[in-house]
Picture 1 (tube, rainbow, N blue to C red):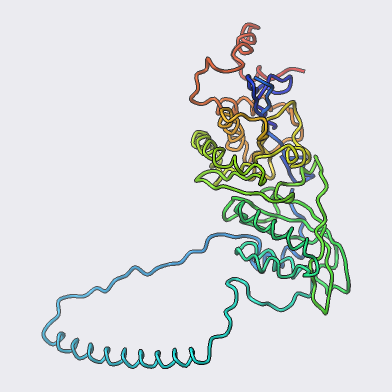
Picture 2 (picture 1 turned 180 degrees about the horizontal axis):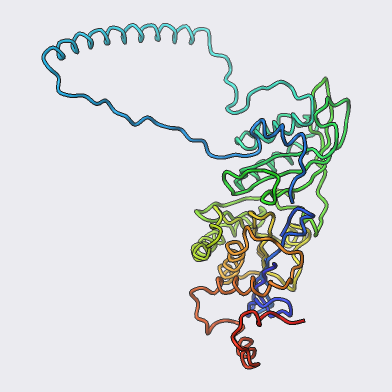
Length: 435
């Protein structure tokens, strides 16, 4: 299910000619069951059921969505007043004025008294002071709630104050996740003892189920839930449990980790249809990339049929270091310029090799990758990069990428002509490569 657009390749029928080039998966059993779809060029799983899951569900920490406030729009309705009604209304007005005056005077007295004694120091919004956590599960649920409500203080509240580097690392993660519009977060303890008082120091494995840029997502543990696994260290002081360690993720091509938000600072720009994120050294490319991505999204949205286009396409710009690290040290395939990662049935994200995609090629590459999102989202991913249906997935993505362009400019027009001269009979299925 890999989609690659770029140079001519023995494996991929989507390539780009010219001085620059183009190109495109994670899952649950392991994550390698999800496919990567890329764009090449030359020079021209679900979480296990766990007691902590139910505790998180009971606390309502598995999902996040916008609140709704109902407003009463009803107005007063009345008829024409008679003489008696006018007199009675006059007396009532006098009474109402008197009552209001008394209330205002009383309010003034109370306000003055309040000012004299001085108010208590206000608590930070969204950061209540709950009882000190005594279990790992309590720490994790408190963190999730704080992240989803946008409370950085609450997110850091249970981090060991003796670990300044960890505090800085988790502050960066909080800011990155919020910039990526995190809408679901739940940390599921995979080792025993997470709901018991912690006697000392321990390290536990945690499965992080999450959603980015998908409002109202439900972390139900099914194939629509992306996740990663991490190792967290905890310690206990004076009866309180503290988060004391976050071990760095190990690159794993099969489980496609680390994901970008695990690896450091990301800055992001959000448009009406696309979120583009990049490490600080590439932040200068965000505005131009977002403008081209918005144009690509307007074209690609028209091809969404069986599943609606995502609320926002999520695009990462990678430098040389990130390109070799994100999602398991880069995609397979020859000279890819970008790829689409299938993190779950409902989550596909795009990575672009920022150092090798020319500005004039950016929209074409993004349109190809967005084409994978609107045609493969909610599809059953395949194990093999070049599976039997890859030719179709890549062909459709190329068709979308070249929407509105003159077919005579297609960089593989000569290849198409050569194939037709072999005697193709018009049957689409016969286009499938034969081994």
